[in-house]
Image (tube, rainbow, N blue to C red):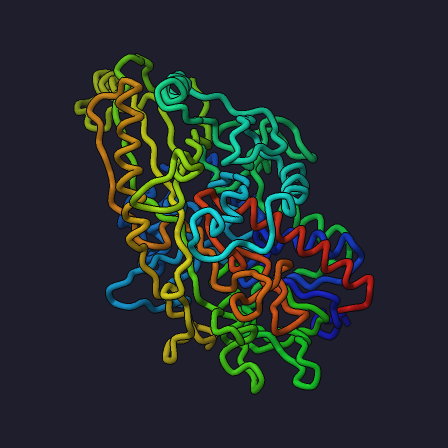
Length: 563
């Protein structure tokens, strides 16, 4: 009779197999701990990757509105990466509902599969600085993190050296340099834009710092520039946890992976005020099961981890596990997006060609330059923004005709440049998640109610970003500039953060600096839920560094028999 993994007692139960869950499983199992890694979705195989599959082989040619699968994913199809190629990686919205106030829409784009969003994330990987960790000390808003850049820097190093981040050092204190593989090349238009912005404004434009390797690294092949990363990568050139951290964890023989395990709540021992496991629903059989462990580590993604904690109420924790402060679920953040500008660079005469040039799955990055010092302090908003974008020749999609004449007309496009802002989202307690009292998912687990809006600060920030973007494009010689200043719906950045923020004071935070719940010493929230503020940089690199730091501390506690 095969050994039943549910009959064992584990040292640690890790919920979620994505960017942070993979790291937690790797670190703990390599330290000799017995780990159960629970994933709500199925496993994934490279055989299903479709980055090289032409669109004409698809039943519906990936055309907008075509295909019955779109009816089951009305929210997920708002994500650029959810297509006919890979829609089954994303949740079925009909089975995984959530509610929002009628006047506060929120788009929650998520995957349920081993690796989660690391299978189709944007891979932009930036460090935060003390401009971010100690933001409250700079402008008086909110709270400082209980950790500094110096505390996290060694763990950024560990993550970057393992993952492989291509990029260029710039010496700009607003965006600390890291350990980089050779950078991808900028286009001629991007080099021109970089030089113009430096000359006219003293600002830094750099190539995106991306979790895509540009040379052989840790047994993985260099990127071959096919350009459709959201559909998988058979060469493992971009970082995704199933083929890196999760693989390492499983290779130790100390990690057991349970798929289709939809965690409902953390189980508590009322006599010790410690967790002793989690309850989950088998996604296939719908059976409810329990697994036991000495520590529970939530890496399910900020909102899912918070949902589990809110659903873990007991007689001693009536408002959810870890919620003695009343702040569990509060302070939801998602980077504000929407503002920017685009235009034509007529001085460049390159023509687009889908066959001759590489398809670089990366862009340029304009490093934050607002509110970084006294001289850049703004009167209308606090914090700041960075830009992501690109420049290059594009096809004339309005061309008409047939045959050779049509092909020629299509190539008579324009050389365009576009940059879009990612702005800081302020942590506000009125932005929150809670349990909807009447809504459940297909497995009977109470669903979330999400209430969030971007505020006046985000609005003012994006108005400035739009004007500033146009100003930089104009200085670079761009023509026919189109300006965008509207702030997009919350959730569109797909950077959910906060809701279980860390801090030293249990009255004003949910977790400590090592992601442990103040109220329960063996339960941890090691994902974006622990963020105190959002910065304007993509958060995944910081999430992974925080997880590695927290796991090192947890391993030390195991050695001291404190867990």
